[in-house]
Amino acid sequence: MKYKVILHKEEGGGFSVTVPAISGCFSQGETWEEAIANSREAIECHIESLKKDGEPIPLDENFYLNEVEVAFG
Image (cartoon, rainbow, N blue to C red):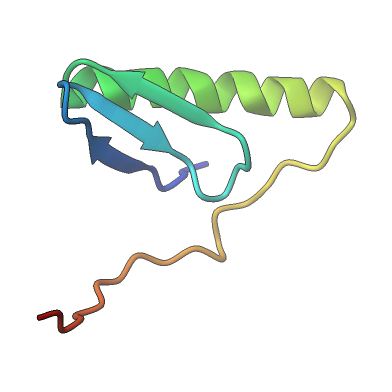
């Protein structure tokens, strides 16, 4: 299964990562590659925990990425 992740570049360096389809699933990394690898581990651990608790596994089918242009003055 694939999940979309959003990487946020942090002012102090590195990246934080959110997983929109999985509430409460976050990660981070010093480099883009490390952030992606850590997010994979975070997703796997989160899903394992959900399975253990008998909770449904969220799907990533209802999330879309798009850009919105806004005007500001």
